[in-house]
Length: 366
Image (cartoon, rainbow, N blue to C red; front, side):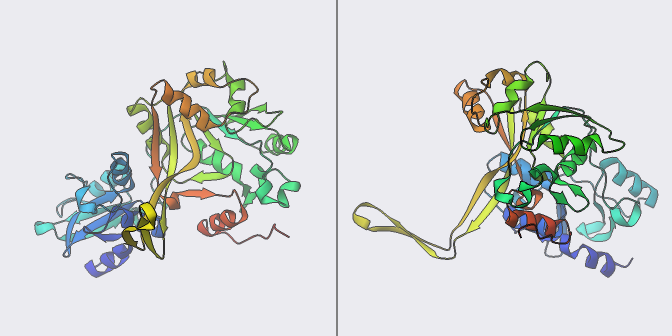
């Protein structure tokens, strides 16, 4: 591969050091990659990973900050004298999507891409764990009618398998073998599906919410059953992020509860007035942008929190967060990019998810 060839292939992964964090997030989402090559005046400046961005956001670095301010000083690169076998070994060891070969004066001599060298299209994620995962699967899916009049929301298909099986498989790949389903609406149909599923590499325990108990109320039924750190996830979302990184953040920061949040960017296509008393103008902003961390519907909890959930009472997970904070406990927020969060909570988001997964649209709306 000539220099023009590998630079051409890497073009979508190249970003200028003056670009902002938000620019980098948007680029990663657009190409569905989590590692970018950073250049300045045609010279290699470093590598930018989704982890670098997440650490910056956790430190409250503004999203309009230039990525040059968050680049790591030491990144893994190869040298021209490194053998091909050495380069392969380095990529395997660190599960890196690409590895640039950097010569004198920060010149890129070559770039090796994982998909060109190895059988699997992407490297396997680092870190395995086997912790319980609770899937909240009891809702009626009112926004997804009429299909949810026939099947429960967790069984709505994405391609050849239902959304809940996508969630299970994403955790099972990390080593998870114990799942708990909070069930209610059309429970029998959901259980029958998994009872008939061959060669499962995991166990499922069902617990039934006989009355609507909010987003966390049914968890009180797991007191005494779960005695270790555990995940909780809605049944209608997918998070394209290494779960072990979320778990590491949770443990490193000694959080009692960690919520996963998607970064949402909103552009107002108008000039915005700021006013004060008597309607006098105090300022004006031209087409402002706003960024928010939106609750993505996945959490990590410590088992003692189950004792804080009242029995048979309507109780949201946000109520639990408030109780933790009132006694000065730690509630963390782990950011993921907007494109890493896929939702099927309504038809619009469902169709976006199909598009993201490159699957044909299905008309369930009648």
